[in-house]
Length: 386
Ligand code: NDP
Ligand code: MG
Image 1 (cartoon, rainbow, N blue to C red):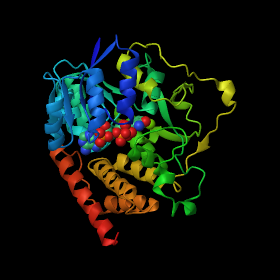
Image 2 (cartoon, rainbow, N blue to C red):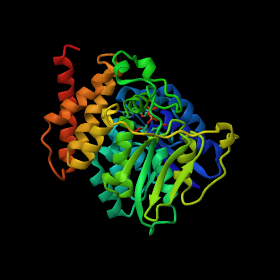
Image 3 (spheres, protein in one colour):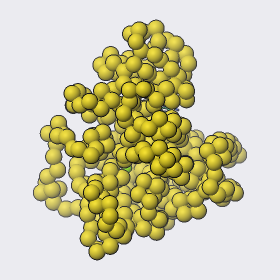
């Protein structure tokens, strides 16, 4: 029986993780979970899965919920609550499925407590990859990828640790606007952007997919998880999302991992690794039904956010923190209809240009830069009268 802590239970990855737990009740047990504002869903989850530590975003919600749950359940709130969830004494695996850099501190705490990490929250690795990887190494903790591309690469490498990799090929669907030209992007709406062709995901990552920032964050995530320089991480447009990523080895062989676009598969693999378990869903990949798969070269002028991410990754230091924080604020502003779609890129570029990079930052510096960047981008937005 694997005991699981779940950060971000009410989200897209969170609910799909619970689906996997539900499919294999004899193999997995949920011991703790966090939610943000969705208290109604949290109540149903507590009833179904009986976790003993729960956390919510706000204090008032925690106080209300504590009165309604069974006596053995402790309800916490805020960042301290996320840490309590991650540190549940019985938990073997912590699934990090909150969105944004709020995932960083609970992930670090879980690593220090020697919990295995099933990492979905890519912003954690983008903002502080060097610190997270160093702590994981120091404490002998595995970071198992949940993101489908990284799970694919991980599976392609499985048991092949000693073979030399020549490059990683991360596939990208192209997001909601892949058939639009750059000029056509100026007036797209939030609703258009939220309509992803292949995956159903949370709002922030769906926008990140449309701007291609998601792929940029994934390139940085891949750099940290697999230890390859950015020159050897490529992005390939593949609109069907059937090949989830590939690895090219030095003898020129390429190994790919394929599957239907269903996040429960990589989630389940992270929870059962190094074993596999039957996937209790009828859906299987039938390539003859698809007939053809398409591949295109990435266009860095069309998708400027991807170029920013490569630059931030290569320069390193505090620049990826700026990239991530600026993106979080800009996407939020777009979702609130305060800025247009193409202004997301402009705001990130402005924040990166204004930043003086500090090499090898401490955790405190990262948190400071994260906070400062958020304020700065909000100021840029106000200055433009938006
Ligand atoms: P969602 O927006 O669907 O879910 C986010 C979860 O985090 C919800 O449970 C939400 O709570 C909670 N949450 C949001 N803000 C806070 C906060 N400040 N404090 C505490 N909890 C908070 O996101 P996704 O599931 O789509 O994505 C989660 C992570 O996984 C992201 O980092 C994303 O990049 C990554 N990922 C997602 C994939 C997907 O298919 N969705 C694929 C690969 C990676 P509530 O809803 O209750 O307010
Ligand atoms: Mg992905």
